[in-house]
Length: 363
Figure (cartoon, rainbow, N blue to C red):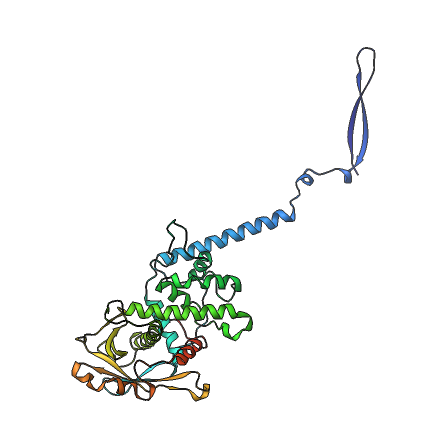
């Protein structure tokens, strides 16, 4: 074993001038302090570095998600499992006649919302209302932003944050409301006792979304004025029409004989209107290309104790205004209460609640 020397210097008097005296003491090798011992990295530094890198990665991922929305991409980081649509279809009966049958009404609404979200652009998705002083009008803008980009999902969000964000729903745009709902179509907070805040948020989101859907489709019909409850009902019905329209025209589910028009005849109160889903507009004038009229025979489903409704639509193409003489309010209502569904308050609340009970696949 080698020996290292350490020296200590002292001075002893030697006349007028002290001379240094050196004393050397042997030190064993194992006692020699290596240079690296003076800079041993601490576990705290490692954890800090890891935390910094994690936050940096999170920030970059969120920025990428926001950029994809600004560029018009509909892709998001969070995706919900979807069930196949092969159990939902429109069956051709005879020339110009079809049937949509056997699907639950709430599931069809989900399909309609999904189709609208898929086809609508994402411009302005991350633009929020501001106060006069330039600050955000939202109480939970950071959370809303994360939810819209798909970076965070509703299920993993703390209840207090969810409750805080619920108040922001009334000042979000229609496109923002639709995106929020499309990202949690399969989330069922009502089934979890610990998720009451999430369930309340989803219910408020549904009501705000359906109201705004109706206002948008009626934006060019200044002569039609509805109260909030009527708007919510109409928005629910528009989502049903959007689903039927998607089932007709999407490649994955297109029927054998496509109709010659994408205009749908409908009733709002006692007034007959025509709704066009691709342009999302409504008019009282009969379209030159004809319309699709619905005889609604839908009934509450006995297997669900009447909570859910099984859709039973007979759809007919009508190429002339005169043909619509058979499409009166009474004949259209049939046993299913008609093209407007005439949803009562109890029915409306039941439909909005059951909207969160099924799932469907995004195209």
